[in-house]
Amino acid sequence: MKSTVPVVAGIDIGATNTVMGLVDRHGQCYHRDTIRTGNYETATHFLDAMARMVLFAMESAGQGFQLEGVGIGAPNGNYYLGTIEAAANLQWKEVIPVTETMAHYFDVPVRLTNDANAAAMGEMLFGAAQGMKDFIMITLGTGLGSGIVCNGKLVYGHDGFAGELGHVIVEANGRQCGCGRRGCLETYASASGISRTMQELLTTSQENSLLRNQSKGSPDAKHIYDAACAGDKLALRAFDLTSRYLGTALANAVAFSSPQAIILFGGLAQAGEFILEPVKRYMEDTMLHIYKNKVSILPSMLPESDAAILGAAALIWEEKHIPEQHP
View 1 (tube, one colour):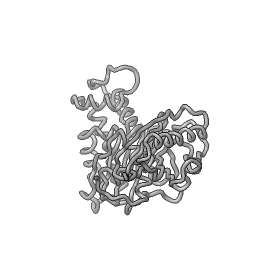
View 2: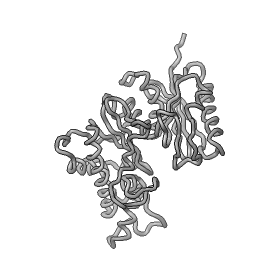
View 3: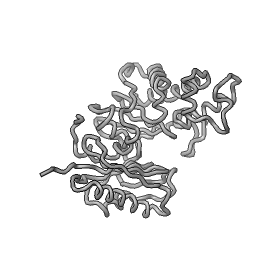
View 4: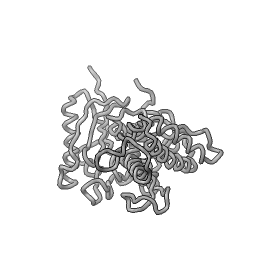
């Protein structure tokens, strides 16, 4: 008799799309589906659609699969309470009881955390942090997210919201941040941050640049990367400034958790030599001497297309103490 494959439904709630996949204990994704997050008038209707997406996936997968749990990554996700609280990029501003609602549909464990914490857990189980117990995950997207792992456990703090490195102040009275404050790290070290830096350089400098004559709006991170690859001096300067802010902030982060590695994930992290080497250099330049040359800067090893799903699923698999090796 053929045995069933245990799987976890990994769900990532995003501002535009909510994606789901069935993930086994080795990080293999068997089924993927998506719904448009903004298509639902109320959070209740959205959660109903999300649950039905999982139920349909299990029905489609057939009897060869057994659901072990549901893991969810979400903006402003509170692990302790299983709620989404005042997420800026979701249309529902009330406290959303995600795990409580999902428990009405499933008799398996349901866990929720913020998306960067989920990414960190995915990296520990399936990616570059396998075998590590102390590391920091940095997600470089539109903003900057972070997940801090100490002694093999995510750091949540007393209220479930610890580890917001994107909102440490790196420039007093600096750039306006979406959180309402000024000078947050993510306004300088993120895809949107480097775009703002590039626009400032174009405005304050008369130096030639491939990006000077492009269409309206600030150059996006991809255009800046392409220009840097072509040797554009202003684009290279934008990457250098971004790396300086990030590297200096990471040197400070090392002082409170002494990680083995810092792992960079996201579109901006894929800039390779324009980010990894200078971030490492600036971090070492500003690091307290007892930590120097002890902390690696590594790119994520999660496949970008499934990273959010794997991270969410890892919330359940971590509790079940999956083996670290791949098949």
